[in-house]
Length: 232
Image (cartoon, rainbow, N blue to C red; front, side):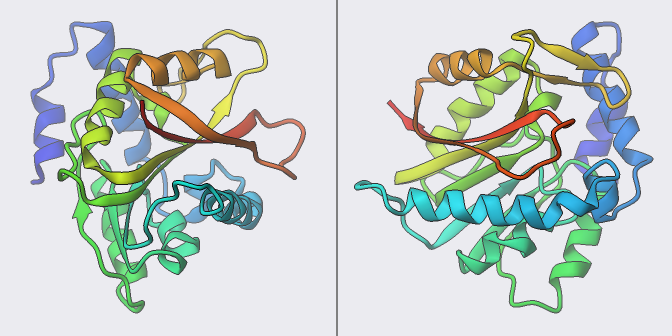
């Protein structure tokens, strides 16, 4: 049994916060390890998503102080869709962090025939501690809603230590248009407004150096934005 699973069973669910994580873990345990499962039945947007991410990454390397291209992290990697879809095309080494063991095993299978080089971490981002000073890009997509505000700030702070001197943390996330935090009880997650995301970034001692809206997504979905951030 992996450490993450053990920690889930040891958690006392007598607080709202711990139940938030346990409920999310239980939800994802029931989700099939497929692209459709990762995207909530919207596998049709995967290619659009990956191309948008690649364009944003390209724009990052047009910055004056741009990161290197040696090692990346895929945070909340699921079955490795983002790693295989575009990170591996840009970085020779990509590490994956994913709390669901079934998803991570599927990622290993999918990446085995490729030339993938990197580590697999079976742990939630709220507990993940990156190695110090090793990442050029830390890509974290569609998973921030599974962290509480306090844990998100702590995660951002730990990411700062994991970055190389010119490294960047990149967030790609759904945003509410209501200006309010919206709770999804189905998968135990929240969707935050842009203003709150920016506030949490600042509280962690980081700043946004590049921001871009994902284009060509269906109009009935949340707005999705990408943020490249670095230590202040």
